[in-house]
Length: 173
Image (cartoon, rainbow, N blue to C red):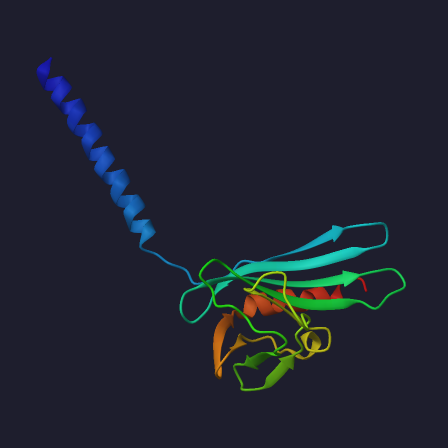
């Protein structure tokens, strides 16, 4: 009887070690990818908001929420804006300053700051992407957020997020 209890106990311990090693082994795999999803939100009758939202790291490892959104209002011009929201500990942004967008091939665009005087919070920036988005190539981009004294925060945008942004253009105007 004691032999049977010891055997069962050893099997349980071995199963626990095996399960733990599987989970620890899977935790060693890291994937640097960004997942973003385009959503369509009907706000008021005739008003539609298309949005792509993801979280990306800047060059110092700080996390930013990156939201590209298109607003369609009946009888008004469509707007497409990129909003960057820094999480706690992110740098305070200065306004109005354009956002510099650079492609992997070196082409540069400047998006106008929508917040001319003051943002809702010091770590939020919003930029006009209506004319820029159709020009962006389907390749990785770097967003450079200007800071005081010729410094900037750089955020790398993977190609899958850029493609998702461009899918917003094809949605109903």
